[in-house]
Length: 245
Image 1: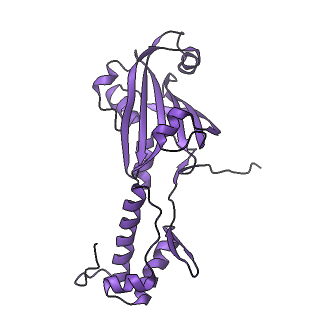
Image 2 (image 1 turned 180 degrees about the horizontal axis):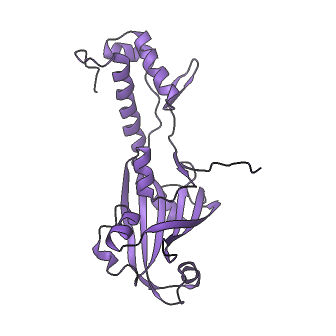
Image 3 (image 1 turned 120 degrees about the vertical axis):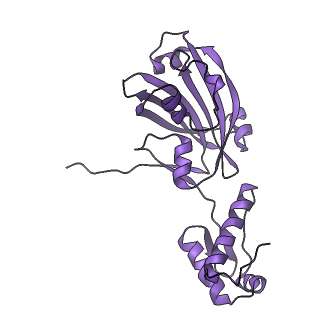
């Protein structure tokens, strides 16, 4: 177990807070519920005073990492991902902005004739060749979202030759010259299907947020149709509202 470096100029409480943040993140990535040691235990482990420990815990509580129950102990808060609905950004960009780690796993990739609802979304004739790219997005070690992107083969030829584990939006803009500009998104709550539950490691029927998005280039062409499922216990959508005069 890492301990405080007594020779460092960094205050002991800051060092302890940083050590506890890392421990919480690592244990939550393994799916553990985290209860921190008591103030006396932490003081003994690190050879510091209870007042210093309390200062570090105050900092973690203020920053939303832990909550305390009097007479019971200190517990890690399950951190939730937040996304502003007023911003058009890829999942990769959102996670980078929030300081979360993101791993993308390719579930499936292939070409298919556009079925009616995909064709309508992409403004294509029914049966036009499109790519279907399904990815599992793992945030801080926890499966968070299953996302399926539909893209016109004519707009994105030889898509399979690219690295698709990073930002798809960045790839579309740099590799295919498609400057993404606006999007239209629809959200609804529902239960997870059996396949989604298996990928997201939740039980079938668990609460998820389902999102559909059509993304348009600056030229007005529909570039992407996205179907995404987000774990309801890990993800929040936020929007800023302004009252009209």
